[in-house]
Image (cartoon, rainbow over all chains, first blue to last red; front, side, top):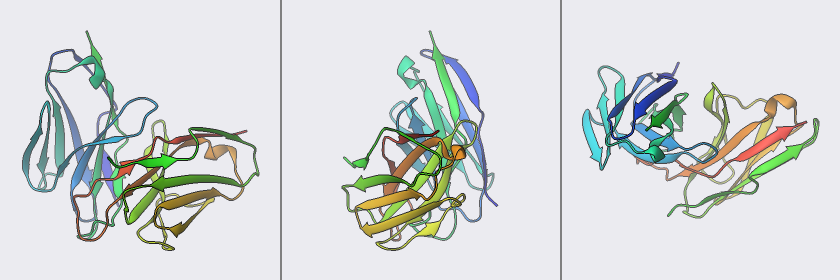
Amino acid sequence: GQNIDQPTEMTATEGAIVQINCTYQTSGFNGLFWYQQHAGEAPTFLSYNVLDGLEEKGRFSSFLSRSKGYSYLLLKELQMKDSASYLCAVRGGLYSGNTPLVFGKGTRLSVIA
Amino acid sequence: DVKVTQSSRYLVKRTGEKVFLECVQDMDHENMFWYRQDPGLGLRLIYFSYDVKMKEKGDIPEGYSVSREKKERFSLILESASTNQTSMYLCASSFGGQGPNQPQHFGDGTRLSIL
């Protein structure tokens, strides 16, 4: 079976740093993706990890540990516009770009002043 | 930029009707997907297609069918709509082949209400 867990809700202060965790158990592993989804809008792609370690993209970074089945998304210098849901998704199965992503239920982040 | 276009943002239909949701992508992507998104349940895969006329069941295919007659277009069909199919429907597309790092790109979604 496949299972992806992430916290349901988090609150953080503008200007601060927040870490959103994701743990996964999947049949095979072929990459982990993070998406951002504002209320009423489509999910948009943020980052991708397939090897262990940290990938940095401006204010956003994503970390992966394959042995632990664990990832986190780190958001620095939080802004009000970062209030959104953050979705963790895993591509399992065989080595193939055709395998659909399996999504966690998302973490709703509220940034407060 | 990748563009995935869903035909309607909001749709209201009646129980028992046959409902068509259309999705078009302009990036020559091989793969296309239909998800539904419900509060507390997240995104769940209904069907996907990795080539024209090919389709694969996802996690919750019951009550749905799909059609992919052209590479750029993927249609979701509710054969006989029921109230438990009221949901947000999201279409996505991606490149296929042996590239595992290809993200899925989503359309804006169709909020479907079945009365």
